[in-house]
View 1: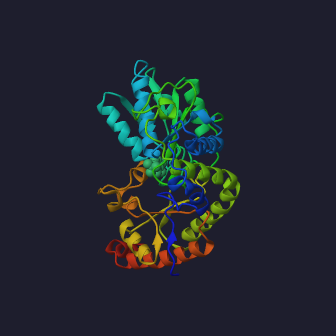
View 2 (view 1 turned 90 degrees about the vertical axis):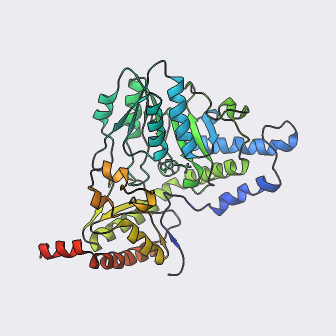
View 3 (view 1 turned 60 degrees about the horizontal axis):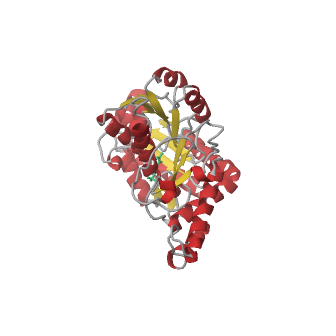
Length: 393
Ligand SMILES: *Cc1c(COP(=O)(O)O)cnc(C)c1O
């Protein structure tokens, strides 16, 4: 196979051409600033309003509860920092989990340096939050629960409705980093009692550098980026109209395709999982089998270094990712794999393959065929593996 096989859709996705088409006019023709008065800007303003509606529609929100940002990381920072600031007279305690994205974890660490107290909940061996531990962690000073909707590494989908119920019963705000879940699984902010939600354009075949925060009416958090009066004075900065339009269109397509996406992509996912489990010995699936994103596959292979596997896959035109050493720029393996209880040496041998509705069965099969060869080759060079096999025999 000569073409690129892109199996890293959790890192970013290909912009769909239907999305690009609706963005195009907003670069060189309809370039007016939506905040301007003259009628030339009306098209831009209407386009931003339409995108807001398309996005609200996907999560069961009202249009005026959607705020455009420059991406998932900004929305996460905004939710945590602005809630901490706005509710500090009520308390200084925040609850999150050990498996959050760094946009949440590093923001929490920053808040700790500002005097806030953060509880990082453990998860079970599949990456699921333990609801009884969440309940136990709540204090009179708790102002926010921030728990991701679905994990970006292992694909585990958290019990959002139950978390939302606990938050509501205790009158605590509930924020969810839904960057991986938005447009990939069903989310309804009312049914799940979600008060704030972060999402990003480029994880749903939309453009990079645009995201949203959903803020339920009545949540009193202030502005994060100060300046002009855009976004009902809550997020300054001239609207990134082409990207906003693109994210709106991507959200609409995701909504229309959700059922088919779930069916087709999870079938491919299960095929990929089944083949690896049947054909590659000493492999272990990470993440929950049932409560899992339709497009996520994550395995650990014993006696393998994730980085070497990625390089050899790349030589075959296959893009994957690993929670191992070099990719993350540190010597520690992924915090998520450690949190689900994997020992260091096993966590180092992880491989994440994330599919999209553009992935084909042929690509998946080719990937497994190549992966099998790569793993045998790497193991044949491993003295640890040799010793292990000698002992097994
Ligand atoms: C990608 C991602 C983010 C960051 O979103 P950006 O738009 O890239 O800033 C945050 N959280 C999760 C779970 C993600 O997967």
